[in-house]
Image (cartoon, rainbow, N blue to C red):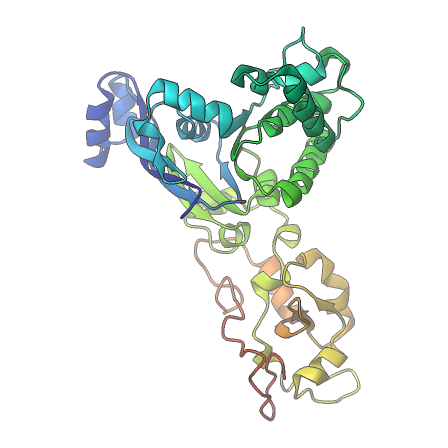
Length: 389
């Protein structure tokens, strides 16, 4: 079961919101509703988030992403649809029950830090635990641990105005971590920071995630941030989710022209990986090495390949190897078994192809996978490379 599910969520502001939902379902546009003084902020949003994932919701200002986030913890009540957390319908809870869920199981990190200027760093980090009613010694112990995780050990007695913007945001993150909540909601949490500090905070979050494995919903309008952080990404436009997928899915097979235009300036070489574009190993037989020898087996290929990489290696790390040899780069799994190959032509085709809706790259499927690679039990037939051969 997914940790978090949104099912056909609508959020409408203005007069007769339930009537507005029915009108939308009947084909009415956002503009028609606005003419009647009604704003459809979120329209029929559905998605799921697995445990331990960072799920990024990306969109321009006014797309509805922050409103959607606030429906996930009950700060805003959906006009229609439901939100389930660990199978429990949050939209069916009383206000008291919702407060209990928010204080114990769901934490939020805001864009503008929201620190109390008259409280120390430690007291700010412990605030959520204070609201919950934990004894002072316990909340200070947990807050100190969270500050250390966030890289602020030694700053416990400082005041917020003594910290840089990045450090203040770390306090906000520590406050969320101190509650040990199951779900973190992060609303444009790094957007107010300078670019270098912002990247540092992204690194911090990714490092923390390796250890804590929290379930996170992260809101951003920055595409590069979404691509860097998100295990899965939802793109919103005019209140609707227009595409959901991995960064690779969205880069290689944009759902429509809007998504294609949104991603056209992304540096593909730093987002896409060898596993996203690799060809099946059986494309290698017949390749000739620099010495004029024809490759026939997996062992011959691995010996001749200019480099061996893992499927999660960024394409930016393949350029030198692809340029130095006529033999493709070998892609292997954790056990060292051959799972794919990246020829120089395929690398250049993927990086050079203009982004277009659901098109193929260089005549192949836009997201080629080695799905049909035989397992290690399969033998190598003459003239064909098989994984484990």
